[in-house]
Amino acid sequence: MRFLFPHSHAFRKGRVTVDDDGKAAPDCLVEFGDGVTVIAEWRAEGDSIRLTVPDYRTARGTLVTARNWRLAKGQDGHWRSERTA
Image 1 (cartoon, helix red, strand yellow):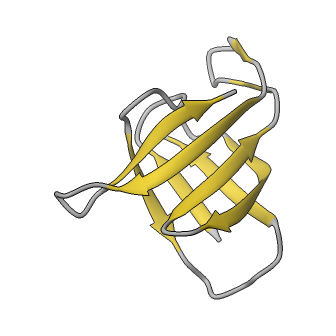
Image 2 (cartoon, one colour):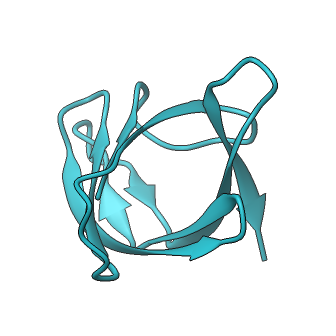
C-alpha cells in the first residue's frame, strides 16, 4: 500500500491518494509532496484506513512528530485525512 500526500505533511481534511497494491501487510510507504518518503503502518477499519506515521523531517528539515490518521473517502470520492489521538 502507498499513500501520497500532496503537501510536506498531512493535515485535517487534507487530500491523500491511496494506491492499493493488494498487499495485506501492515507496512506501507507514505510519500509527501516535498519528496520525503517514510515507512509507516496501516490497517483497514471498516470503510476507512488507520495510518500510523512515525516521526520524520520534511525536505526543509522541520520535525513532524508521529501521528495517527484516519483516512476516509468523502462524498466527492476523494480520500481525506482526519487526525486521531
